[in-house]
Length: 167
Image (cartoon, rainbow, N blue to C red):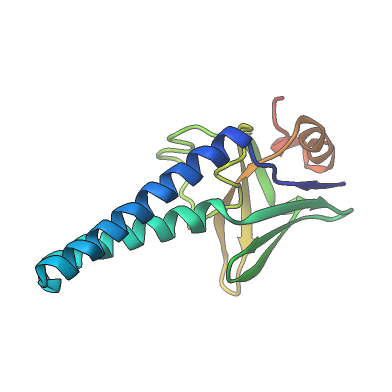
């Protein structure tokens, strides 16, 4: 089964509006630099505006594909600077739950967190917790994903009993 990230049209309009506002702010800052002639005073302001615009575009642009095979889930991110793939075997998964702000608070420590969900997708966030084997031991990792109910049910069927989500 294959699932693609979706984009909510209201969210797209909001991001476009925010990007236009940030670009207008950058243009106004450049105008002030040319008018005043002091680049040193406005350097931090233009840097902050460029960083915010870049972060907004980098967070909202990528498209995600989730696919289920017989042994693993494959997550592919296609962004501005190429693509990234994550492969998680079902036997490594130890939890699938809805996102909570303090998931696992004090008793589970995650070494790495991957956000493989579009900021423009209006669906609920699910957290896939798994153990990643390394040369010396293993580490706990988690993935933030947004998926449909059908995909969630199909994934739930393939997971071990201890890791099944309550839908």
